[in-house]
Length: 507
Image 1: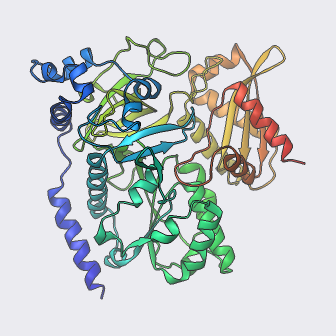
Image 2: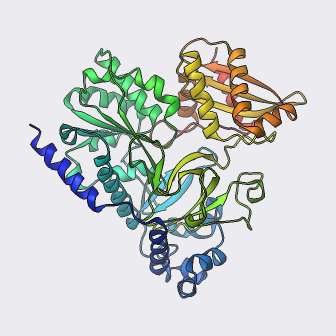
Image 3: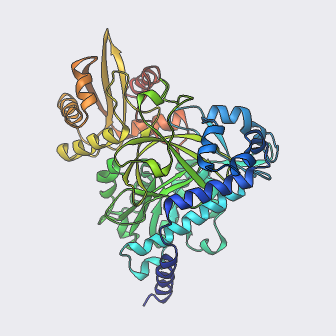
């Protein structure tokens, strides 16, 4: 009998009874007050009169009226660069020991302060997620198994006296002591920077581990599993890890990967989605039978929302200065919003770049619909990444093929505007038929797209490729592993560079 597992499961059940879903509106007001109180004597807090905001009759309203909305470039140029240069008490009190490096899918690389308070908040959110496991039907034995977290290197580099790396590497380098016995691949392998070398070392050690749970971006987890299966001549990963039961995904939508991912398993896993960005742990799936995630409303992050409408968004995908901004109390189900966050890392009314929709306001559950700069709207089609993912999911079923990655752009073909899709496929398909089916699905499910197809958007083309081409592009243009994601939507100039890469790698 799994006595330790029973004890841990009982402790999680007990903890879950006390970590109840917080009242979201009250929690958010408390978080905002705490953020303003703690930061009132920083350079940012003095500049924007946090003391006066705290003494106002309506703190949330005064905050929104006093502090402007910041994108990364503006906040970095005027405030965060001072943090990087070693100044204390700039946007958050005290020293900042860590910097999260984010390559981004829509812009240049970012350097984002990660305070000790943020690391503590991420750990607390992790505990909330562990407590939420009580809602899933897991045997006691599961709680004795190891967790393999595939992230970026924990070998952090020095930038002006700060330890810098991707957020997954920073988090893994700060795991609590009691968790180290469960955590794989362990400190030595986790510090390897080269992704190919890392997964080869993981594959070598894999028979020595009893993994119950995986965590990481789908594309890289899949590459790792394939390497383990290949090295040990397995039919599927469950031959080696029979107790593997849970996969905690995040960063990108899992559905496009499901078909190819499950070919590596003897049976499907419990899939739990999370929303851990470089700026903080924003949301997590807390219950089965949904892929929606509950916002973390009581742990160092204050949320605001900009309705994702033309009047509020610039042509570059930014938020206009006088945009309508609402609080959690005012959101509606089914509407799309640009997410703004203020955090214990000194982000203030910060445009994180993601768009979300609420699937259940009573549970404050969201789905990520895309990136503000990754909506396809050149021809007025207003296509979100969520809608594109759904179209690909339907095509996977129709063509009985795995289509894990795609990149799409609206480009000029002579004097006409067309959408051209590059889609990975694990078998040969009729590209013209696939283009027609995608086009029809989008017309049936998006009125703006249907109208655009009768006007400016003249045609749809599809090119299918092996998935390796996407991975090669990612490796050459950024770096493999960690939080790096392949952009779903490109502007024409970047897309032409992508096409040149594809052409060069087809010969």
